[in-house]
Every structure is written in C-alpha cells, then in structure tokens.
Image (cartoon, rainbow, N blue to C red; front, side, top):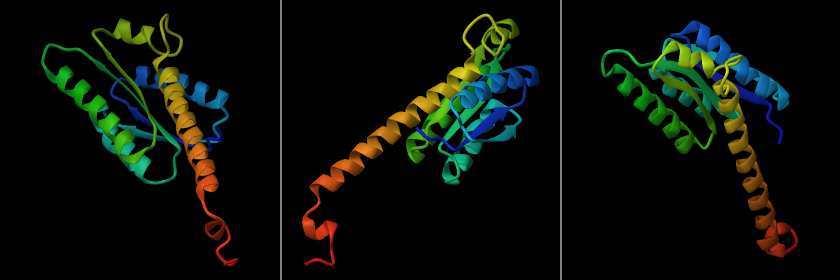
Length: 165
C-alpha cells in the first residue's frame, strides 16, 4: 500500500487530549510510511464531519483521520455531539469512498480520556483511528487492483487494441 497523503482533522476543545490523540495518530502514520500529513483544526467534535468532508472531497487525501474528545456533562449536549460526530464522519466515508478513521473519545471523565490516548494505560485511540483508516484504505486499494485486473481479462481483443480492427 502506498499512502502519500493523509488529513488529520482535530477537534481542539480539550487541547491536552487533542495533542495526545495527534501524537498517537502521527506515530501510526509515520510507521506506515505516510509521506505527507496535513492538519486541520476545528473547535469541537461537532465540526469534525464538515472538515472531514472538505478534505475527502478535495481529492488530495487517500484517507482522513478525525480526532477529538467529548466528555459527558450534566446535560444532553454530550449525546447530541457524540451521535452527530459519529454519524457525520461515517457519512463522509460512505459518500466519498475516502476512509475516515474515527478517533473521537466519548467518555464520562477526563481520567477515562487520559487512559485512552498516547501514553495512557489503555488503547491509544489516535493510533487506532489512524490504523483503522489505513486498514480500510488497504482493502479499497486491493479491491481496486483486483477489479482492474479482472477488467483486463474480460475485454475483447478489439477493446484492448482499438486500432487493430
């Protein structure tokens, strides 16, 4: 798989978490040999889908990784933001065909969030989101190559060489 460019879309509402999510994602992308990583910041997780859509539709990126955190408060705001961020990011990848990694923490406490980022005691969500986007991209590329090869085999001689009729 040759991935030359990935977009990181980062919700900065919780700056410390955003930085650690980005560290994990960048580590995974660097290890995978991604040549270029562009970074786009938004205020919060609710804005991630539209920026992911802009990046995906630009044609410049093989994959998009969305990172951020939503921590439960005393109102229903948490439920709306989590639901719409997840739905929107999923919609972007389904509509554009550009894999989007979902690295948005949806937790009850800051402690839970810190456990789930680079350097935490549990899974590194930034790394996992980048790895998920790259895994989807690898499958997409594999199927594209297979389709291309199958297309060559099913073409007639005149289609392969139109000037030799």
